[in-house]
Image (tube, rainbow, N blue to C red; front, side, top):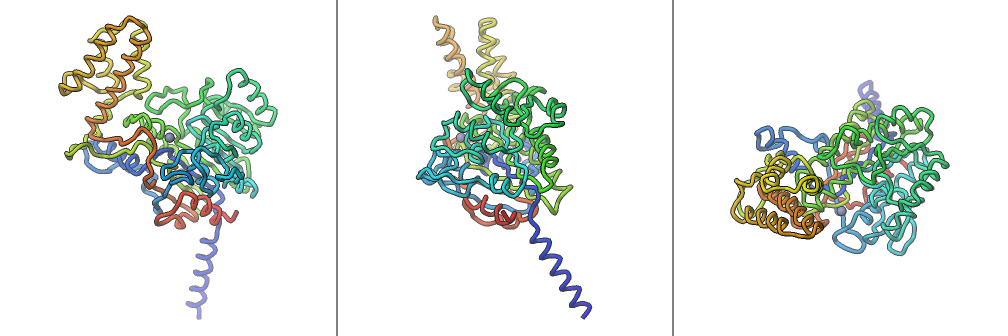
Length: 454
Ligand SMILES: [Zn+2]
């Protein structure tokens, strides 16, 4: 009898424990982060340690629950970030380009709104403009993702508690007016992570942006100490949101530039963005470890970008450690070449030195075809009489260098755009076991809704 009672008690305790709803919800979206982006970054870390394999796993690939996620939109097998953001936020398929609306234009609410209705504090953050497609899908309703002005105003009517990332895309002439409107509606606009700590006291709602007005946080590989990191944004958001409501919080954090670097087929820059994303998730994991019975962390992607493949041509020659030689994004490399040339016209020696120092591209070690490509481009730039044309030629050098880095690392890009492949999902915490098998992106907010009891 006693054994029966203790068994019943155990069953009761387990059922109560599993019935508990998460008080703290983290929703991480790696924009453009396909399976190879994740595994490639782990293999890169391994090769940097001289090991083939994954001795240093990313924190989220160690989560106990995983799923494959389909990402197609209502209008195409390959989604854009507006349709996939809408699916991930609202549980509805829509056409590429639409935000928080179904194909017929009807407005649909997001999991962030459902959480707000339950009294949760809400945070929305990214590394790209705060009115860009993915974050916008959680608070805006627009027929077009390009309605940036309207989305910047939709943001205001959401009344969410914490926004962070790049400044909104908005007409420069009216930008001050927009910020005044935000302030008049109770938002404290904070610039830079250090200022967050000095200004948070007494702030009811916060917008955390770069120190200087910038619509993007620079790539991780390019940052200096004054730039925000996604980990800092996550830390600030946790601090703000956990003080804001006793009920709990819902916090969406987007690694928005994994996608940008993948559109640009810039592998080293992409992997540093994945590492930035991982560092942000590590902050959430630290919070989870303090509140394991009250927290759910879901990590996924909106789609894959670049058709990124770990392999090149017909040989087994993956050589990811070569990516460690690249110290700047290809975009910044372009600017560096152009600016250096403006200060003092580049000589051939200075040019090859720049490519070597910042991209890890050693001219003497290149094959004949690549040598010819670089040398001819430089010679063409030398012959240009028009400054603009010279600049264009010099910019091409950075593009060629970036492609050489990919080729040397033996990785490939099928596309400069998105692909329709599965994306991975990783989950830990209360209700994480509900994410399993092959699911659709529209299932994710529905599962969150079910486990949170919204
Ligand atoms: Zn994209």
